[in-house]
Image (cartoon, rainbow, N blue to C red; front, side):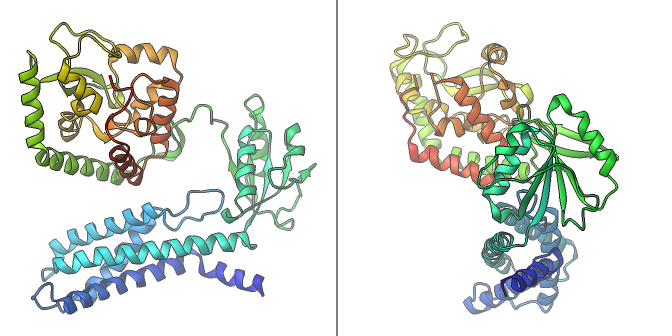
Length: 462
């Protein structure tokens, strides 16, 4: 009975049925929004006679953008699958494109109140639907709806692949054997033993094998070519795991260059939409922040001027995105004098009394909101460093320069984890690489929240 139910679910949890269901869900969300607007009387204007047509357009746009954001990709083979954040971005993209189309093509003005209500209702609908869908998919995979995989080779990446798949049955991958594996593969027992194959079956479909996952160590990488030459034209899928974990520290992706496959290494895989949302967030929050706290900024500026001689602001050259240099602004906390490269230390004699307070509370960093507004920095990202130290650290710390793959930030993952000021650089760089590798809008908001929650005073802020 369970097997029959799993097979039935398998037929429904395929792209076309899910697309049709989500199109209907978008239409229902639109009709519900029209009804809510009428019942609440938010707007007195009559409902357009074309509101049904608008709902159908939204349904089509929803499916289009969901597909564009990879929402119908299978969760199997250990892929990222459909994240809730992707669902939110796809839904917002469909709404923005709907507004754009209606502005030019709609015979009547679309109710702004209905659009606002639809945004909230549809987000609620799709977040619930995607959460339920993920749970159902994981349950289905864990109860027999899984792909049978044979691992091939000696690559270290296969150990990680085997560990992930055997400890996460919800991914829908069952490793049934290992062919031509290393010596330690015979004793691999993360959750169970993996059978060692001495030879591959001549008829993979008869042996019920869905795919091969191939990876060989660098010194025997020619064996990948040998395997592909023998099996590339078979019906069984083949997936190749590159042994690049030690080098692909912030990202790895396969790109198509006019039909030529290119493996992109350490290039953050952010979509244009992702970067546009991050930039929009930077502009809005920095502009609003500067306006809201402008009296406070003016007060601090006056206190800097009154408590010591010299300019109010201090500009220092820092390195940002792609190694570009820019001037980062702070409230001046030091006595006037020739600028020297170097970090401040505890009880630094160059600090002014009020400057000590500003540094201790990190209030001297507030002018960097201007750097964010003009696009030289982001609210969240690795902290920018002086070129003098960049040249020094790039020779001493592996992967140090990769932190410049994204915009520098006022705050970052390393800072909220406690690695700021005079703390070990290795841990700070690991945090920066983690941030780049796992970046999302949700992570940015989490870092901003933790920055406020943990407070602005820090023991290492000299």
